[in-house]
Figure 1 (spheres, rainbow, N blue to C red):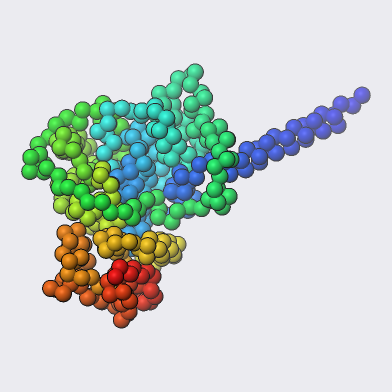
Figure 2: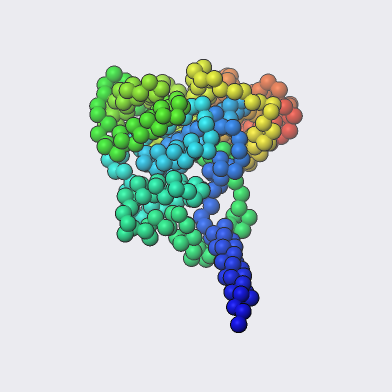
Length: 427
């Protein structure tokens, strides 16, 4: 009896079953997996753009550096691979993966989480946020190695690693909380950044009590270990690395520890340390979004402009303005999203904060009392708006002769076409 036809039929059915199972798994993963990681980092893996600067770190970087503004101001293509609550061990492995996919001319790393004494806390919250950092990273041997190291996973810890290699294992029951974004997923156009369009006043740092020359040990074994591994990785690949302390509401006992990172960076010939806490880049009265000192869009614009000048002065970065059409489209789209938030501003301070650092022309009216409020006065000075005894009645260069109808507020326009993009009536 010839068994070959039966064997061929069995193999064909097995192949069809496996193919169907793979298609089902892929479809369910696309629907049920959390979309946060892919929204922000997906474009890095899918666009193929020649990124010359890569930014890494925690939420200070995620919220504080804007690649689209860097492109607008300098023409440099960059990507922000920072993420909320990301520890240096996670950053190191994301850097390993990123440098396997592109060759930047410089890497910039936020050092805030290097102050932590823990490598990776295993709380429910921290492990949940780890998905935001790692889910977009394609499946690879590097990802397996990363998870084994980050989670300190041994041979018996396969379940924990499996949840990150195949996130559907974690999110398979999420069908009850699906939203429109799950059915129609999209990639954010901010090139990895998460601008915060909220204002909250902060306080000046005690820099007079802890000057930049005062240093202390980092006092974090995992922080130092992974900062060194990042610098050694970049040195081995011939990529300069910049460690940076971005502005935040640093407690006094952290300032000397942050100052001490300069000595660590000095041990590596292609590493530089920038401590922006001492550079007078931002004004805590107007540039923060919360009590911890995450930068709002006004503060992020200041930091991005400062870093853009510093980076382009020191590294051979390419100005691609005029030849990167998708970036120009993203600039326009993100500006319109920003203006939609501006149009909903309920007070003058928030409206001025949302106007600061943006590529917009505008008309503005405000009474003397509102203009004299300390935060408003600081924002008006940054915007270059003169204040008189009667308050503010100002039209920026290139703005149409169109004004708020209520007597107080602002109207924002596209600086090239004059199209009205946002109107805030506060009268």
